Image (cartoon, rainbow, N blue to C red; front, side, top):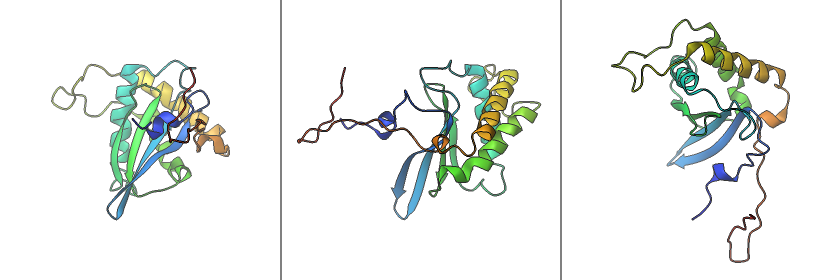
Amino acid sequence: MELITSFSVDHTRIVPGIFTSRVDQLGEYAVTTYDVRLKRPNREPVIDVGAMHSLEHIIATYLRNDPVWKDEVIYWGPMGCLTGFYLILKGSRAPQELYALLLGAFRAVEEAEEVPGTAPENCGHYLMHNLGMAKWYAREFAAYLEAHADDPAIFAYPMTERLVTDAGQHFFDS
């Protein structure tokens, strides 16, 4: 099987930031998946599950209510590795163009007094939330984004280099 793009990113070198994960062309329309990475994979503890769930609810609500971006948002949700989120938008923009939107979203978490959509009728695991920890992670990531706003590493994936045989097969060392 072909290695998917997200597994070609060098997870030993990735830093927190906003990255273009993939761009799909659906007919005449582009749909872009962004990697919003809060933690260094395999080097930092992952995000607390309850906090991750709360961040998902608050930021999804924020994005889908933003007057400029709400019609562009397709999806906001957690990565399985619990180190960040995927944001899927209509169109194709450079990650730098999402900086202000995402900084605002994480700052909004800090100001949240409750997590939206946490009634049993609205949420598949309504008891699994942690607003206090969500605020902590949001504050940490927003401060990181502000401190590194001019660092191109927070907008560009470090890609792995894989040897390719003449037959087109990827070489993986052990």
